[in-house]
Image (cartoon, rainbow, N blue to C red; front, side):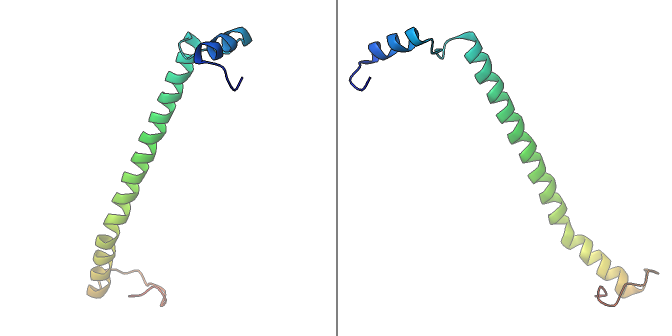
Length: 84
């Protein structure tokens, strides 16, 4: 099969029952695959956005916590190793 022309390869594939890209079930498979890939990308993107929001707010939360602790506005006694 090394020296076959494109036409010969296509004829050989057809004789062997190799499906072509134009066949409906191959097209259906490819569309489904593309939809799953798009869905996964969207889920990953959403996860990254949520993670960014959580981490970007962390310094604000820490600053607020430090301010509350310094002002004595919190009645909770923090363990010594966690006190700021």
